[in-house]
Length: 116
Length: 114
Image 1 (spheres, rainbow over the protein chains, first blue to last red):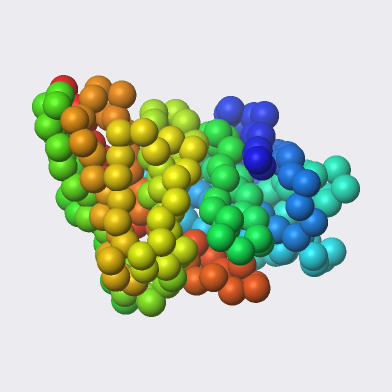
Image 2: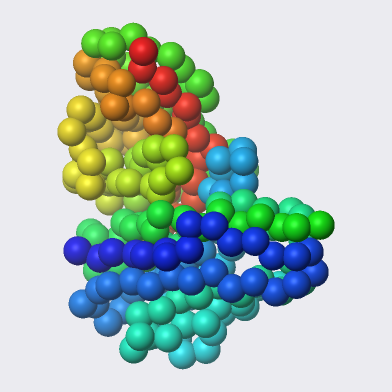
């Protein structure tokens, strides 16, 4: 079974600065997908960014980018120019590509606080 | 688009009562999921379905049942509610393609068992 580990329960960053959230995972599969979700106080799950394991290029979405290290099974999220609206819980998630097993496995989350 | 719709949004149950959380999606997704999120924790998979008529257990299925008679609907049934089932429940859906499409979440259902 796959596992996802987020070792930072809480992080804080000064507004306009850059912060990196860590995520590691364990799998024996070679093809899979990785995601970062944001959960604001409303509890809605919002997709931030996704990465296909077969792609070497790191995904980027505006101020959000990832550092995907497949051999190390590491998938960190970098938030540049942090804004107050970025404050939320962030969850890393793994999804298998095997048919019938495409369920998301989540880490325990990192609570990000933005300091004005 | 409505996306993934969950009802009710809030519910208080007494111990031993039963109820059904409804989930519907209008995106013609073949995959649907139910997760629960306990306070300060990540999401744990209860049940999932890869298509109408097919369901399978996730990590924490005990105390729950599901059915998938149509592509659109995936209700979650709680039998004999217990305080340990107090949680926020999320329904989600996705396509199944080789590109691993994004999973879309509903807004959550807050359930308290007293």
